[in-house]
Image (cartoon, rainbow, N blue to C red; front, side, top):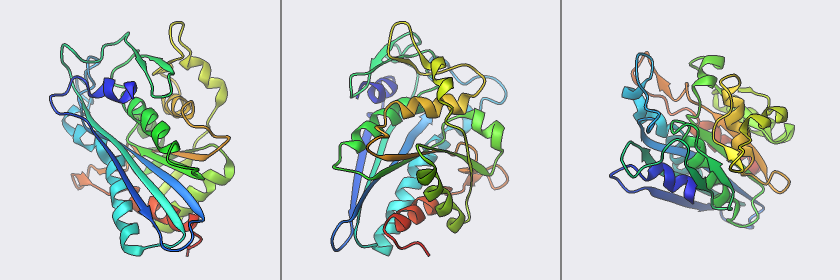
Length: 273
């Protein structure tokens, strides 16, 4: 898990890899995974968040995705849907600055052996998610995986404060999560997983770079994650929820995503109402 551990390396606090499993009663007919970004604080690393608008003072919210995952886990433990197995995975850590930490220009190795050139240490969430996605896919024959992350400022600019970007490996996978969001009363918007943009992630010295160009930043992040999901074997959806996990008006977390994820699991279990 060199991508995940590379992000965590500069922190004085050790990383915590979390895996919870829910197994419903009766015959298990569906197996799914839910992965949440869990950056408990994100300084940006050597590409430090600096200046007006950097939001560094708010970067405890960078675990909003993992908060949603844990909220969904608690909800499903109370509802007890039958016939479904759910794996909840969080690669929790901090992204800090230290002499032994990840540097721009470093090459990190993912748990599947793929190499990543680090062009920006502040594009760290996709690194932790990549190893977490690889891990969850090894937990038996999963039918579908959803990840949720406070991933890009680009998605905040595109969709504003209340809407998460939704990327899917197929129309059916995307619609299953979109329908769950409608039942939950949470707003998502389908975004294009434009494969032609993946050229921006090519590196001359590694399998991938961790960032593309400035334009289409949320799409580049989704395409990077897509490289670590076997979409021929498992349906996959990515939620870029950078904006709606926090309310500027209330000055607090919203819990965005927890209800959508719980509703999605109920739908996968055939219990959508």
